[in-house]
Length: 445
Image 1 (tube, rainbow, N blue to C red):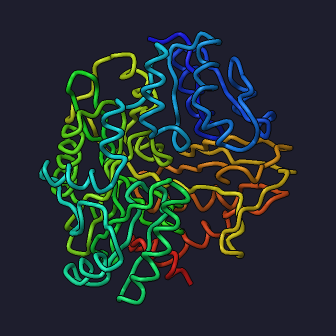
Image 2 (cartoon, rainbow, N blue to C red; image 1 turned 120 degrees about the vertical axis):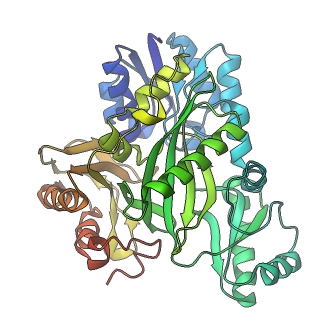
């Protein structure tokens, strides 16, 4: 086992990894930008090093500096969290070149899933159901029109190197396709440095359901059930739950086996998530694979008792998976709400500023992962995620009621948050009935 780990991240996920390390008796090294001098992860780590200015490109994305700090601090491994460098194959190779261990999958597996067109082809070859569409990049608008006519409208235009909902747009006819193609190409080039696009059939009223996998370095792979992540704004998840209300045991087994096949096809090791779209007839289609820990991992931990972050560390330290597939059980129901510093009344615009008052409730079956404190200033430089509130109940309704009570008792003053949105969403008849399709927010009246 490692004696010291550097966490190449910030915010709640850095705090979450530090907690897991402390429980395993591992020393922690935090890194921070000038804007994050007073951040919580800096205060709770054993050591902390400044790595650059506020801009992520010069700090949290500065591969050379992060590795320099890891070597200087005598850390043996680097945990990337999610976002930033978590799915950067070049970073993984540089970490290994420096004689350090990357806590995550191997670079080849990350690369295999990084380009969506390549990933789709790999999954098709592995016998994993894939949404009808292209397996190679589209070279022109004329080619896009031809493919869209063959597949049939509506279609989804997507960036091949994309992620996080950036560079994707629905087109319901040729006029919308022209607009979507130009917009996605521009965004793909700006955000990912690669303008390559592809087209998929748009599935109407789908559910976004993902399967958590754990794979060690000895060929052992298990799936840790599903999470329902259909409630999204701008293609980014805001409420997640486990298990899904529509996934019956036979479907869980089918999706779980497909996810394991996906992981095996790319020689995957560590924690990962295979994302699927599920249509109204319960057909499921591969969407993408996230080769890292997910923001929403706590709901899986709450219903299975499996600590996914600790297992990430153990697998990286060449420990064999001691959990067999038959050991993975479902106990109760968990719901997660992502609390953001943003104003739901102003199209979820970010709301940076100083937190003048902060109070989280304490109750049995409630977990709060956060990276904030009273007096902390939320900066405008990074993702505005403040905290994740996870409520567990014996059943979905108990979890829902507990979450509502917890949200109502939470006090965050000085900035706007999306807590009023969560209360509205969890009280809505469609949520209560479990009709949580990906267009849920659009239908939230």
